[in-house]
Image (tube, rainbow, N blue to C red; front, side, top):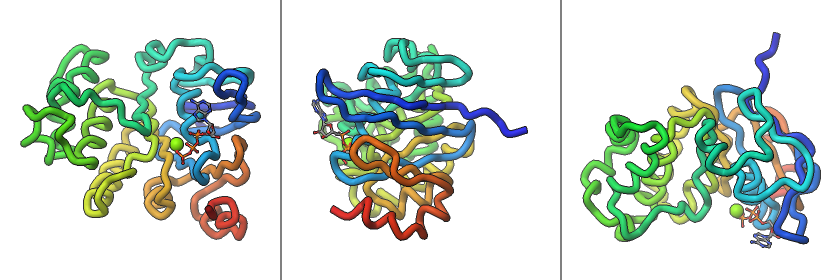
Length: 233
Ligand SMILES: Nc1ncnc2c1ncn2[C@@H]1O[C@H](COP(=O)(O)OP(=O)(O)OP(=O)(O)O)[C@@H](O)[C@H]1O
Ligand SMILES: [Mg+2]
């Protein structure tokens, strides 16, 4: 028997006030491994993650997570239930130190022993713990944001363009760690770097105008002649 998915989005419609962005979008995420969501600027990728995280209400459709229907739950309740979310603008607090930012994530799990674990994933942060987050490089900020989400002990980690504005040398490092993380939790990865996304994920969803226009195993989607058409600027 096949395992039931950890996250199942069914016919989701959502948007901003009267401006609808997602039109009946469906997607499934298994208990382990990574799913990537691709699509050109404005396709609705960020809106999808916001709607799953509870930052935007669903107009209609259903979101099931870990056996429960969560689409009426608050963002905080979804986070406590194991939905980790690293938004595109990373949302770390510039005036707080790296250590203080990480501790904010640890509050869900009520201990900060996990900070050692974050340092084992991103050793570069070790030297930066006392530094104000506002003075970090783009890559270091992303590491703090990912680290903070991990400290909430998520079952599912959703990342919105974790390599945006990050130097190429650090992008590889982040990719390696996402591959490692996806062996112990589910990952949903929104990325503009298609090659990186397809290295990390086993399943791909391609969006256009708030709909899924192509999906399947990465190996198939990669070879699909329609892929370039959906991703061309
Ligand atoms: N706060 C908002 N209010 C109204 N419309 C918005 C808002 N944020 C985004 N939109 C619109 O929703 C659509 C989808 O935007 P979204 O940010 O989800 O795209 P995206 O796929 O994440 O793009 P990118 O790759 O540039 O991050 C766009 O047409 C955008 O203009
Ligand atoms: Mg976006």
